[in-house]
Image (cartoon, rainbow, N blue to C red; front, side, top):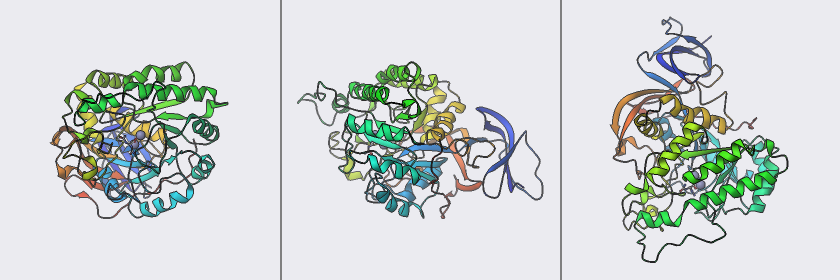
Length: 460
Ligand SMILES: NC(=O)NC(NC(N)=O)C(=O)[O-]
Ligand SMILES: [Zn+2]
Ligand SMILES: [Zn+2]
């Protein structure tokens, strides 16, 4: 017996908007979906969103919540509240920037202890591959870690060192036997050596920073990964994923690996690469600094095309915040500033603003930020879709309403963001997690956390 029913003339079902009624059980699962709008009846709570758009809650599969250890940068409470306010009902936390990093089961425990009472949305976890922790990977999988990220260039924090090709090979051998995904921060210094930035190039100019992280860093890394994957015996069961693609020069390599070499390789890009361009980043604009960097307008257009063509499957925030001092906004030195863009919870409106300008439908936006990110995290059939058996995670969205990103609209801890002041189209009016309202635009987020930690061993 359903406890509630949500009705709307515009429900995203199977990739299309249709009028439908969604029945939800006491424990927050979708038990039935009927075409059209049913009438209210006495013994069932009736949520009437007849004139609204109902989307599945977003799954942001790349966020750095930084707790414990760097809780002044973010934290589970502020991070998951920001997610809830943006229609993001699941976040997957990155292994680095918290201290300790999620590279052993022992290290994982203090993170879980911190998360358990402070999850306003559901939270899953990625682990990390660092040199020498290959024996820790299976125990982490058994404890619910959904996949692993490694760096092929320095990560910015000492406790998460970069791997060498030999470490990657070892981890590939372990992870091909596991229900997991192996992810890469794909920037690598080519054999020719580091990119040269002229001594005369001012450190406060974005162009100086861009020169220091060229496209070739990304292509070198991905070519290396593809080469190692080809050499990995039995690689047909190994899932590989490139996080935060910024360079369009990577796209032919991805396409070839996916279509000709038969490598199971997926890739994501981020909201900021799809909405900002290097030509318009101001001097000292270190709030735009991230690695790999935001590139040109022509590069951005190619990323949009790659998403539509399915070469890139997901769009995430890569929310990687820090304290104001570390952004070095006053001096504006791009080489001293922390790398990372903050935007958790703003993604749906950001992406929809830009997609609608390009004539791309909201169905696609949802596919890239919910259905496909859920799949990437091994959560298909549970998250990322409005379908029978899934959690009743919904966004009530007004695609036409416009707003400006003020500090009140930013719910994460340090309100430094290149999105501040930006006019966006599409407003999250309400967020539901497992059938319960966790955010309304009028009242904000609730005062009690109702998120769960996702710790079941991944099955696919
Ligand atoms: N240490 C980080 O959080 N790095 C992150 N920073 C970015 N993207 O600038 C990332 O995901 O690589
Ligand atoms: Zn990274
Ligand atoms: Zn990241």
